[in-house]
Amino acid sequence: MDHNHWWPDGFGDGGFFDTAIAIGYFGQFGDCNAIYWDEGRPRAAGGRGVELRRVRSSNGYGGFNILLPLNEASGTASPWYNNIVRESTSCTSRDRKPNFFVLEGPYRYLEAWINRGSLPVRSLAFPQDSNDMGFASELYEIINSRLQVEYDWHEPRVAGYLPGIEYDGIEASESGFQDTFYGTRKGSHWTGLAISRGLQGKELVPYLIKDFKAWICMRPDLWPSPPTTFTSPFVILKGAWALTHLHNLPQDVLLQIFALLQLSDVMNLSSTSKGMRLLITNPGMLSAILRWEVLNPYGQLRWILPVAAFPKEVEQAEKIAQEWLTSSDTLHYNRNPTTSTSLMSAFQNQAFPYYAFIPTYLTVNTSNESFSMRSRRRFWKQVQQFQNLWLEYRTNGWDTDIFSAFNPKTLEQLQIAGMVSLHIKLQMSSNKCTYFPI
Image (cartoon, rainbow, N blue to C red; front, side):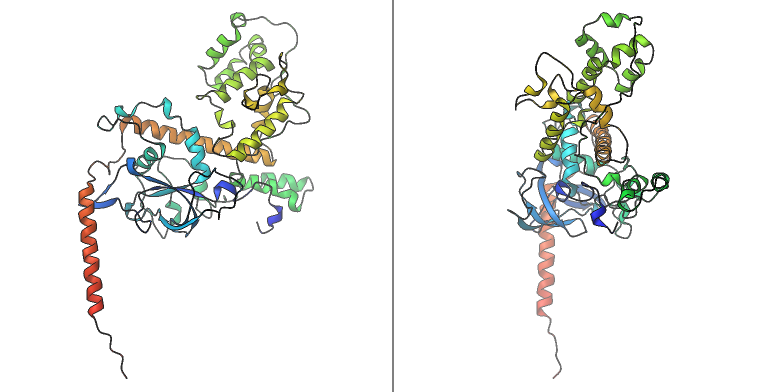
């Protein structure tokens, strides 16, 4: 799209998607120094000794030229060029080198949303190496123990994709790179609809974004404000209906029962009778069910909450949440809903109207907020696939083993031999005479 001023706010590169997290072993010149080949098989150091780097300024071949402070908050407003160090970092996968990088935004979401506490203990798959291992260390072993397609410099679309992960079609995009992808058009339904309504120019952009599936380029932190009027997705029942035995249970007991079900199953349960519909979809009960799914560490909607690694995301989300808390849709409790303390998130307030917020949050339309939330939900789906990989890793160990036979002494000997060989070549080169005719 040539007309950059037509782009909606939040579309394209920006913020914490301009930097990357590099994980691996980085030698004197930033190249991987923890792998060698033994009888045609790669031997690499395990995850316990990996280094984590925050990098920028890609050279386009898996390398970076700038180091940024690791302890700096992600997505902060401070210019990226403050406190930088110019140092090479190589993450090329050529020759099966184990170093890799992840864009910082997706990495922070992955780090926040992977629930390692729900997984089996390491001793199940690694009885000889059962001590806890850091997040980056385990991710390094998971990535490098999967069966992978070798990097082909002539076919960029195989670069950076892990077998067994569904990337929502971005690998088939025209660019083929995960940091700049624009899907090819699958149809013209939305654009045709807009044109038939008389829209033109900039007004067509949101509909083109839908047809090209370009909403996956939208930043995932634009929460929707309360609508002027909220229309419930459920039919509001009036009158008296036969009550079920569940109606006699306290709300906290009901919530414990509903927590054992998938959210979709709870919604299906509400359609079994008018009494169940009245019980589940009334604003108080529905908000309580959704509140649990958002705030609980095992909840199916916890991806809705802002991630603490992004202070600006937290600030923006809390601002929108306060709007909802003071809207006409808020639930009425004894406490004033606006009295949330600075230590309590607005999302934690009992009066927060989840019954209206979640349907609005998940509404699919052509607004920037809808594109943003769809993008965020896509990240969540990606993370759930990695959650399954983590479960396999903790249960069955490495998919392919390149770590156990690694010997640091062997690597050291090979490195010394390589240095000696290089020294001899340099000596031979310096002894040669170059003849210049007069």
